[in-house]
Length: 80
Length: 136
Image (cartoon, rainbow over all chains, first blue to last red; front, side, top):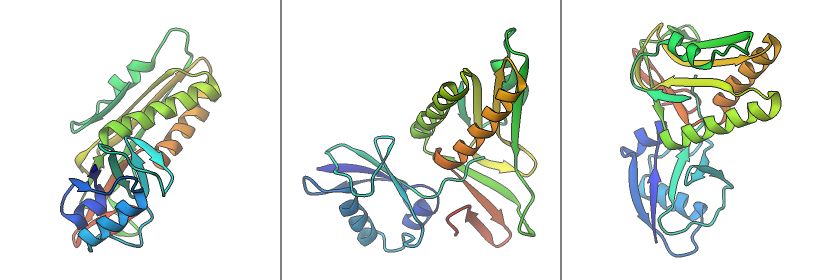
């Protein structure tokens, strides 16, 4: 299945890309996705706590993914 | 009304969105870009938003305010992109029949924006940029 991934802020800077598509096995979770992203982009920050959103909703760290999901990696927000 | 924009913000137009004859109090909060952090000179700021989700999360905050204070007259705008020092990066306008509720709801809204809305700020120093909360 294909998952659309969005990077922001420091993650975007480190990956050098903001939007990409990742192919994962059926029934993969957000943890599987993060493992794959860290292997694809070793420069991603490892110490920054992130939240994950699927289709614009925050989700638990080990959530099941579905084909076509848009997953955003959300580092600490700092609007204002 | 929720506006996320690359353009300079006019706070009066945001304030006017929430004014109503039945309301005796209007609070408008301006977030402005500061010229230093921990004694280091900031040259300018850069903001980035995850647009659809930021809009959803602000709508959620407006709903929370409605549930807690029965206030519906809210507007919020946030600037994205490069913002010079001293400019307005955010406006929250809130209006209610009496001032106490407007002050409380205003502070609550701003706290929640800083907690859950996917918008990020980069402070750019002479040595380079730092994402607030994440580093460089």
